[in-house]
Image 1 (cartoon, rainbow, N blue to C red):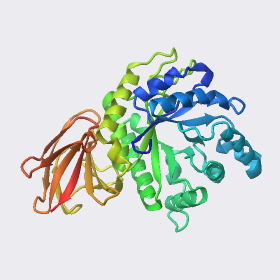
Image 2 (cartoon, rainbow, N blue to C red; image 1 turned 180 degrees about the horizontal axis):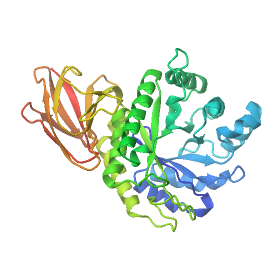
Image 3 (tube, rainbow, N blue to C red; image 1 turned 60 degrees about the vertical axis):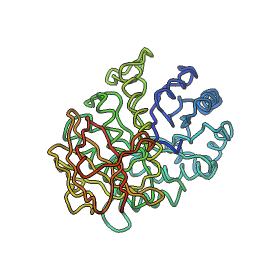
Length: 395
């Protein structure tokens, strides 16, 4: 599913507690590379029916096998870990619906090298797969600004050592309060600008349910989380979490409740995932981030957009908050995306651009619908979290 924006999610349910029919529901909900149910080392074959159904549904799974994460590497060592992972891999080898294996969650700084070694071995044993690890959002803060010890340096080391160019990281603060939004926007900048320099890609683990002080999102906030991640340069999202546990009082509001019922959150998430990929998914994997700016309110991260930021797009007359990002595709064509990052109110943006230098073309439905924008046709209306995409056709 590398031709779409990746939509993944944490399942956290043992394979015995679900049926393969659930895979149909994942596909209908717009998931593309979702985590499989959990299995132990001696029950890996239980994933085969899930993989078979995923293949029929046109999606892929990240195999979640307990005992092959980075945390077991120190105890097993290189030889032991290679033997264990190889035994697991051989049971699923060659399945077209297998995207890769889940390598673990939130390593502390002292465990980052263990994670790299586990991922390196997984890629060595199964070169056709993409191992995925979920890093702490604060991983970018674990390094200094000294040459050779920056987050960019570590990402380059990660890629060179493992041969893997994708990782996942979590960001939940946007579902606390407005200060949390500032923290989230700053984290998006740090991860995506570092990936840009290191030649890496990232998926963001975002919230689809509630726990502790984190609230569950509205439908607008589901889309807001997807579009801010995409506009910042991420190539996928992974939702925490899809299912509520039978007994976990602090965890609630998931798309599937503790009784197995699909809640209103499931249908909200379904609409947002499918809408985004129907609109932009096929285009997004070809995009390469050039720069991102904000309007309305500085979030102590990205620069504020002004007339000197771009030679064609000169001004965005708006009081409210938006994110505007510039991209280039594989063929060198230029684009910009604008996202309403107000969580509760729609905005109208009056855009001024230099029509002597370029024509703007709005792209909908992955470019199957195109509309040229004249200098006088420049009022953009966006609901909370909505994104619009334009191609810059230079004259």
